Amino acid sequence: MDASVQNFITTLQNIDIFPYWGHNIESAKLLKREGDTLQIYYSVAEVSFPYKNRDGIYLNRFHWNSETKTLKVDIEILSNYLEINNKYTRVKGYGYWGVKELLLNKIEITFYMQIDPGGNIPSWLANNFIDNSPYFTLLNLRQLLENSNTSKEFYFID
Image (cartoon, rainbow, N blue to C red; front, side):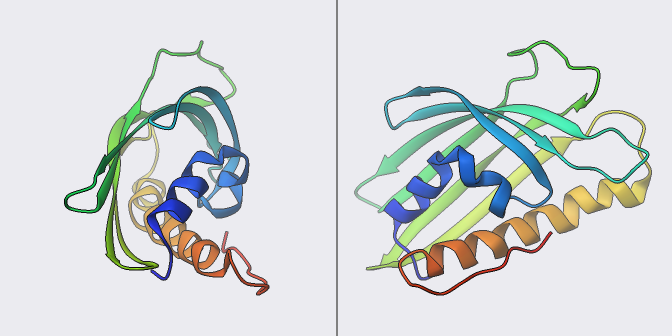
């Protein structure tokens, strides 16, 4: 992607804009931040009717390795950090973001998540989490990062 590691960090730490680029993210709210290395946020993902939307509490830990010019953001889902809201089904899982600085303003991003969407859902809905969410999240993130320093308009894919 044509972006800097700092652009990526700024975007990931700005939870208010997460619903604009995270695929099917209905809402997101920062719960806690400790410096620039830890953040906890709550988000709700939209799911097709008649199934309940999914919610999760995500802890991101940021690790920068200056020798290899790589950033790793470990993602832990804190299932019990907040009380369960019966309006949603709580997800479980973990993952990470990997960002490698290739050249000035050129990065490579890896995104990995293992999510248990919870509840009894059909295979097509589970496959939506597996296939569509990572693809469209990265596509939207790329568009946001590559256009963040220009006057170009961008349109997110739902």
